[in-house]
Every structure is written in structure tokens, then in C-alpha cells.
Length: 68
Ligand code: SF4
Image 1 (cartoon, rainbow, N blue to C red):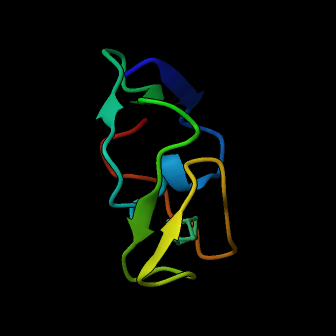
Image 2: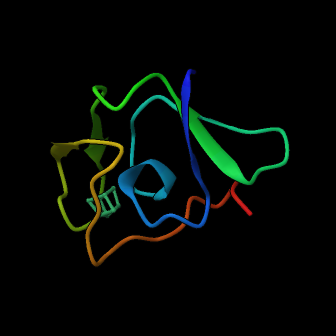
């Protein structure tokens, strides 16, 4: 996991609906993933069943529950 974003950023990578491969940082203040070229499915969110970039966003963003 070589890329990360702060948990306060409202993007797909930090969203509870994003099914891409990711980890949470030690202090739960960042989400970590391989690169901005990866894609993950939006499950039940604003782009349901669509592959989304970790940097994308939408109005139905909800913070991933493991993040602070
Ligand atoms: S498209 Fe919206 S609801 Fe779906 S993962 Fe991204 S921010 Fe979350």
C-alpha cells in the first residue's frame, strides 16, 4: 500500500461503500491503497455497481467506519 489519503477527505477510498483493496493506517487517520490507478466497486452508494477511482467522490459519501 504505497498511497494514502487523510480520513477527512471525502473520496471513494475513505467511503464505506467502496469495495477496493485498502487498509487503515496505524492511527486510523488515513486510508492506504496501492495507487490512484486501482479501481474499486461502489457497493450501494451513489455509483452503485460501478468501478470507481479511489480519488472519485459523490454526494452519498459516508466515512468508512474503521477510520477516525
Ligand atoms: S461513488 Fe460515492 S458512495 Fe460510491 S464509493 Fe464513491 S463516494 Fe462512496
